[in-house]
Length: 183
Image 1: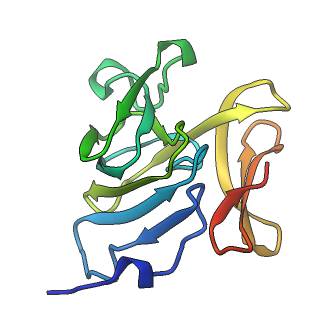
Image 2: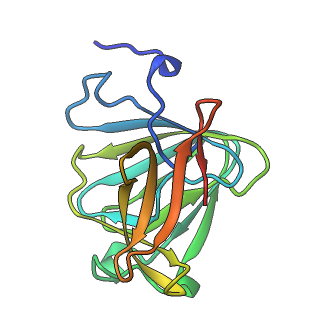
């Protein structure tokens, strides 16, 4: 048996104010577990994305999170994110859960005024190929993006357009120790 105190774990640089990995500290070998706190406007992920083989379950502990989800995996190929107008939103409130099957494009947000806390569970531990998409301001359309370190700066991450190389978004660790989106 392993036991951890969530607040004692490091805050990982993510688009959520707080994201703590529980998987390794708990010694999990077949299940990924992460704890999230999302300030208003924060997201669980860097981009609209999917996982090739991993299914995810998010349990919202407080606040309300809203997921934007694409087509069901049996309705579209793995690479098909679905046109923005074809996507649907699912609001998940306190002590509610959402399951996202392998291959389904999704991104969860805090679109409310209060903080969201949640647990994310993913199985199997490895998620296989992952496709990520976001709106590129330079291309003026949704494109494939990658997540990169901001040059030599270990304290910042960016998403970068796969088509033109433009920076799409940037996150850094704030002075208060929480993560924040810079642009």
